[in-house]
Amino acid sequence: MARLVKRFRTRPYAVKLGGQTASICGCGPSATQPFCDGTHKITESEAAGRLYWHDDAGQRHLAADSDGYYIRSDQQTQDA
Image (tube, rainbow, N blue to C red; front, side, top):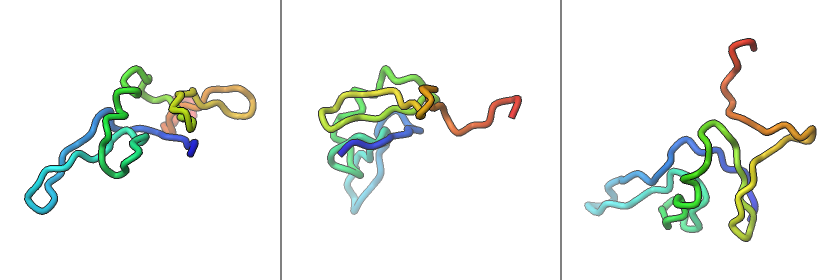
């Protein structure tokens, strides 16, 4: 399933579940949500503040709007 992923974390994070530690996906594209499956390795070269989408084949694309402008983070610019 193709989807947009805006990442706030760059790696998995550990949580304790019933006395065991589990790794929770922090980047978004894991096929075993909410758990990490190692897919974060494909996100390591992504620029912070950019929005990417991954297609069914696992290919990464930089998200752009209908006018061709790349979609950035939802933070307001200084002149906004």
